[in-house]
Figure 1: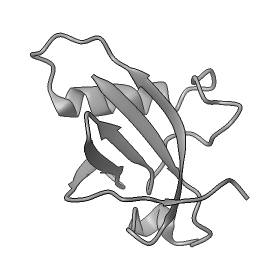
Figure 2 (figure 1 turned 135 degrees about the vertical axis):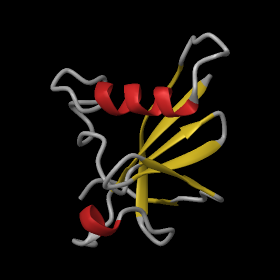
Figure 3 (figure 1 turned 90 degrees about the vertical axis):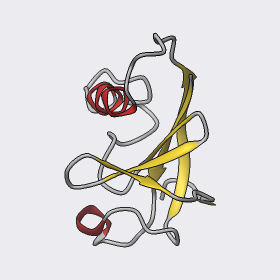
Length: 101
């Protein structure tokens, strides 16, 4: 299963409280493939990715902030925004591409 981590690099200060907005500027900070059994739930995968990308030794630790409210995880083409509690599926995800400031 292919996954991508999109970091929210918007200058909007309230994004940590309100979460992802389609107008936010995003930067792809990681992509990889997960080898999982077909029985694993999407919620389990998202929680494991959240844990992995919040550790000090996370794979993208030198190039991106930890996975935070307002960021987006894409699993096999379906997008999920990190919320204050858990994730919410996004009906569409067409990011405005930006870079870290």
